[in-house]
Image 1 (spheres, one colour):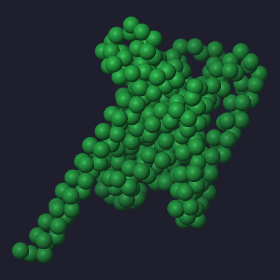
Image 2 (spheres, helix red, strand yellow; image 1 turned 120 degrees about the vertical axis):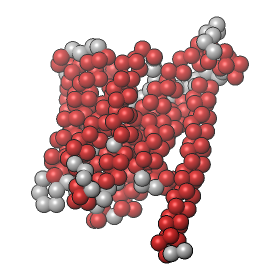
Image 3 (cartoon, one colour; image 1 turned 180 degrees about the horizontal axis):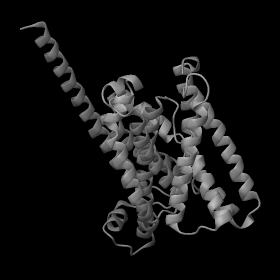
Image 4 (cartoon, one colour; image 1 turned 60 degrees about the vertical axis):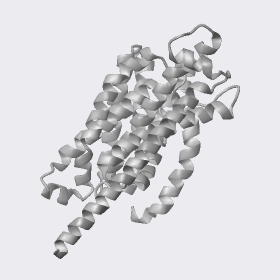
Length: 347
């Protein structure tokens, strides 16, 4: 047997072992997701027994307990969709920018969508769900382009540190603009401030139906970009040498992330840090191959947001904390750890 044959067998064995480990993690993540779904429909301000839960899942709403469970079902589904969208968009943004600090919140995408919605409500009186979604997506896209343009100025182009600084500054500026717009409109200030915290409470199937086409398109485009992101990870020159159209690949992947961020921000408000935390956790489990990283980011993002929503209901009983507050408590220390681990000087 030649040395080349031995090397090939070793690589095949390593790949098979890696895929087996990834499959085990996939089963574990799906099992955890099912458990969080069960907890989400069971836990709330009202204690509900499992017989009522099973009856409500079967479509019966004959009692107050069953009605409470029926109200939690769309909330659970929205948390799953929002977490999956934010986790996947974070992985896409980190892949497109090659920036470990990239996140829809840190890069200003969520706040751009938020500002666009607030301006649309305050100045143009938008009321339809479709208008909310389109305005949020356009705001997210404009913010992403603005941050990338600012981060690309000067020597070295769009470095991770410059993009993070440009995104953070843009988020702060847009947040101030949102406050400035809302201050003069007492008639909408209460609803806008509540929406700005970010949450999945009050979810209904009717509200979710409007964002499903946008989320489906965003998921499809993002997952389709997995191989392109693997090429981009090798560097622009190497990707171009492999026949990849670098600018087009980046634009397509970014479009998927923007659709996901804009649609979720329109219905849930700006929820931060999920897109930052989840891709890093997934890399520890399945490595850097985006063909595995992207699906895992969606699944673990869904689980993380659902778990955060359940925790928010428990720690503030009989009231509850919005999921955006819980993710901020988790994400802020994680962000500091990432910065220290990556050594900002090297970014």
